[in-house]
Image 1 (cartoon, rainbow, N blue to C red):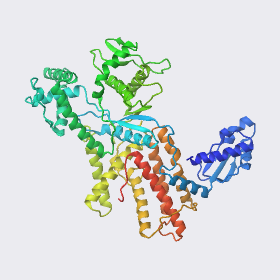
Image 2: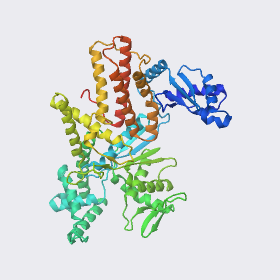
Image 3: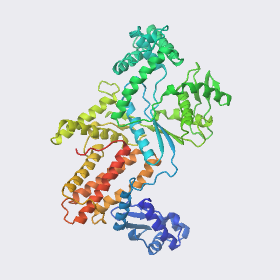
Image 4: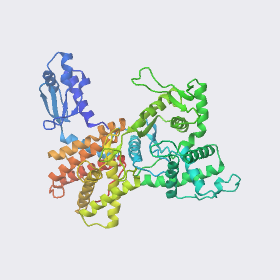
Length: 598
């Protein structure tokens, strides 16, 4: 279904052609002076030089040749603007056509793409903290937008499940429970099916082990203690044994993975975030050696100061792009190596057309190097689009990265709990409501507060996480959007209780607020096109905030349920029903839902 702007442009094009002017400039735009008109066209001014005529004369010619059912109140205004409105009857017809389609007639991909979205990226054996919030929220919304536009989309969490952190956990566990069979090299039996630790114990083990490797001789001196050096050496040895197939350590690693992933799934479920693949760095370990050997034999990789690198700089670079390091001087792999091996694996598994990474923007140079290396060495097929969405920092009111009161990094579950408690206070403070019901509603509205608070900002920008602002029922917030949806649901329920007709039909708008709401709904098409092409959920947030504001103006100026003319009342009901469904579609794309009442 064509957007309304495209339809209006087509109507203008006929008039331009009939008047003998280049139709390239026959483009309708939403008016930047809504007090004067709803739409405008500035093409006459662009044509003045070409036709050596005053813009106002060209605009007058076009006006004289316009014959359209859609365009009304057309005026040629100095120095050469064409100002016009849309016929209210045709506008109502257009919105009815939108509503008849489950996707509101939005133009989707005619040739769907295979897309992998890499978002999440937590390390196992560690709790999710606020630093994981943006990747999860932005990635989930981008995934939903791409799927809605008819693509085949795979979401991959890309776990940090390999490397020294595993060696640290194993070393600390061996120190605490040396009697476990996993540490007995002569043990040949079956290992226990149950993990020798809980998720709480596991989350305490890793930071304890990490701290032991950093103990210094004194506060000012950075020299590590002998115990710290010895402990780290043991952890590195444990890592080496794990990665080389030690039977006991592999069994322990499986326990760590099972316990951690179960907890991660629970936490992501609370965020309404899910992944199709729960793959990690460990899944590509066997691919690294042959990949590196091929890079060397193809002449791409070479030694530099002991390390193995690939040049990725280009002649037109405006800044220095260092070589992409594949292996360190000691032969160890890096994040770069595993990311390249992951790209290789993804090509072999699904051969995607596009891969989108949702990661902290400070990783920009890393992905420039990885993408260029993958393209240069043929790891990805020619034409594969590699896309990096680098997001900004979530800061506290002091403008610094969000922390707990004691200065630590806040666990995600605690942050969500704080938001839910704040929403519970506001919901129960407004009216009498059953406590258990209030708690369920506070979860739904609290999640909307968090997600909308994040997504309403452009992803690349840092933003202030303000609980008081985000949980407000007024202003550009998630609760305000949900309150608007719930208000519409309430009106529709009361209309039904009054015995209102199910067969409502949209009539042409008679009031300014009614037409304004109708026009706002037609902006869904161009908005979705932009949000998809730019992978920009904040465009959806801006749109639904505008819709909510225009609806609330319409609601306050029209007595919907008290309207005596039944046809007119039915038209009101039809309009707000479509408004609600548009809002519900949009919040689903943002990753949250609306309660029945608040």
